[in-house]
View: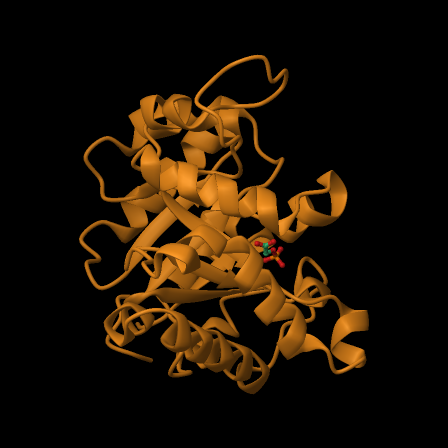
Length: 255
Ligand code: PGA
């Protein structure tokens, strides 16, 4: 593990009712109170955001949306704008999750626009990238990851400036929701490649500060070995984030 502060995020996806969301965040807050060594974030469905924020109160849990549009508002039926997320209490937004890319046709270009817009509105993006099983088997992982980084961070590259608070999430598609996690070595190899790419594009202080999360079947029993890798700075957790009994042990991986 590095000097970067560990960041554990729960992506609730399209799960949990309003009531269940509030109960879950309360349980997480209660069971992680006073824990200062790790940053904790939850990403509930849009409709739960304000109530979850209310339930968090003064506890330090951070709140993210799972997606957003890049425009400030307008005729975009079904979409949610960045200022609405800020008003709901979000500090972060997940962008380019593989389910958004594969099921809803999101492209690197859209993610790039969203990332720029997020910062413009005071939201920190968690930008997701990752290869499919087919791409890995064809030995194309490095090329796919680099292409996604180049495309999703285009305007930052053009400006040669990436805010140090940016979070990247490496989520191999073949490991998401499959119970098949990447080995710590497989994760480290890609995380190292991502950091090298960042070093080539931006100042080294930025490349060293940006936190790279791993996502894909993270569980209480594999988080510790993943977090032991030098370039793995946190986790983006799906299935295991839906219960305090599995999420809290992940957050408390150090103990
Ligand atoms: P999983 O999902 O932990 O259920 O594999 C991770 C994610 O999609 O962020």
